[in-house]
Length: 112
Image 1 (cartoon, one colour):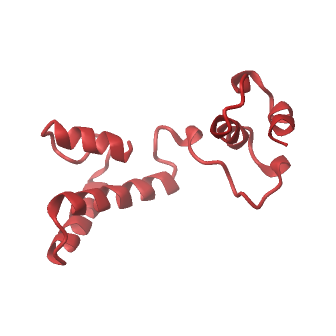
Image 2 (tube, rainbow, N blue to C red):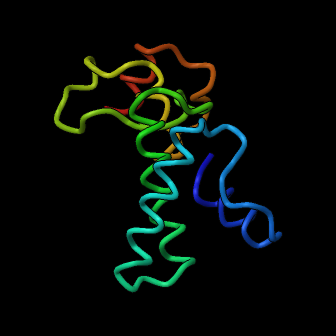
Image 3 (cartoon, helix red, strand yellow):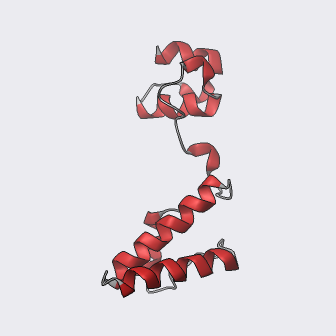
């Protein structure tokens, strides 16, 4: 679940919270959204901020479906200390051809 999904759902007029959220996530979303609305933030912006907060928490807890496709690791670490998935995501950002078939060692070499 990402903000683009959330925005598409809102544009179609469906409820803002995705099915994958737990009751705790829904409660957190409503609490954050209400807090921002109480401070004078318009409703759509409050919903966006609340959804981002909940999704960040889910991502940090490892509860997102696409955990593997996110992140490039700590930029201060040497390439050898990154996981293969992190190296793949870096290669994707740099548009390195053939990256899907490369091993971790090959990705390291291509990124140097």
